[in-house]
Image (cartoon, rainbow, N blue to C red; front, side, top):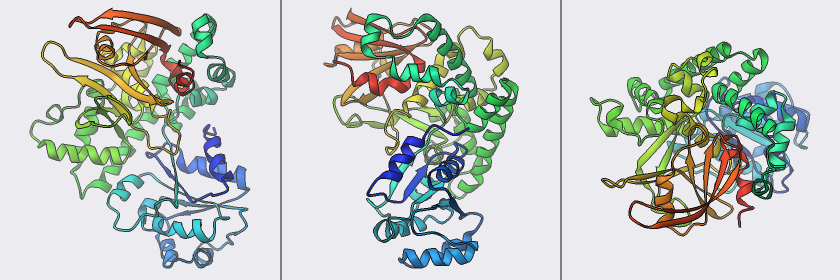
Length: 462
C-alpha cells in the first residue's frame, strides 16, 4: 500500500540542486516504509542505517569529509555505498543522534550526487534541544501527515473517484451545478464516512483495506495509542507521565473548544501542563490551532499564542480515545454530528494540514471574539493563493452562519468557505449582523471530502 507521496519525493530527487532530505512526522505515519519503498523503486537500492539500533554508526560522522564518512559506514554495515547516485542512503531514527544532522551539510556541498534521506519520529523534539549549529539552507524538509481522504480512496482502489474530484470539480462547474452528479456525491460521502472512522494512520488503513471491517481497525487504534503512551518515557526528564497522559486525553474531550488547562487537571499548574502540551506538539501527536486577528498577510501576524484550540494527530485515534464504538458509529445517521459536531472540526483541521506544499510545516489558525453578549468564532482561517479565506465547519448539511456574518462584516473579504455534507454550491450572502452591520460576500459551500482540492479552487476565485 504505497502512500501517494511519490510526486513530493520525485521533485526532490530530480532537483539539480538536490540537498539531503529530512522527513518529519509523527510516529507510525509511514515515514520509514515510504522511504524504503519509494527509494527502491526510484534508485534501485536503499542502504538503510538505523541510528537507534546501531548507535555506533554515529561515530562515523566524526569529521566533515563525506567520502571518509561513507568509507567508515561501509566497514560498519559490511557493504559498499555507491557514490554515483545508484543507491539511496537512508539514515533512520536520526533523532537518536541529532548532531548527525549538522554533518549533512557536507553531503550537500561536496557529495551532492549521493541521495541522502533522514527520518525520525521524535525529530522535532530532539531539534528543540539541540546544542549544535543546524545547516540552514543545506537541508530540504518534507512533512508527512497521516493519510488524507484521497490517499484512503487510493488504498481502497477508488482512483477514478479521486481523479474526478481532483480534476472535474472546478469553480465553473460548481456554478453551473455540474461538478458532482448525485451518484458520485453519494459514493464520495460513503467513502468519507469510512475514512472518518478509520482515520489516516497507515496501519489502520491497511487493516480496513484488508478486512473491510471496523473491529480490526479499532484494535490497531488501541495499539497505536499504547505506542504513543510508551513514548512518554522518552519525555520523562521534562514532564511526568501523568501530565502528558492528562493533556493527550483532554485533546479529544476539548475538540472544537478553546483549550483550557483548568479542564485538564485543576490540581496541576497551567505552566506545567503547557510544557506537556509543548512536548506533545513537538512529537506531532497533536496540533495547536492559534487565534489570529486575520487582518492581513501573513496570516499569523498579531496571533495570540495563548488562545488556542487543539486537534489530535488523527481522527480515527480520536474516536478510539473517546471510547466510541466504531461499529455503532458506522450506523449513525451523520457521524460528523457525534461529539456535538467536534469530530467534523477535527476532520477539516486534519485535512487542512495537507493543503500546504509538503516542504512547509503546516500551521492552523482560527478567529475568535470574546465579548459578553456578542462573542463569535470562525473555525479556521487559512491563506490560499494569496487570499485570506475564513472557514466554517458545519456538521450535517445545515447550520447557522452568525459568527461568519460578524467576521465578514468587520473585514473586506469577498469570499468565505463552509464545509458540510451537502453537494457544492455558491451562495451570495447579504445579511445583517446583530449590531446592524451588513455582511455581503460570496459563500463557497463544499462537502468536507473536498478540503484537499481547496488550493486549486482558491486559485479560481475571482
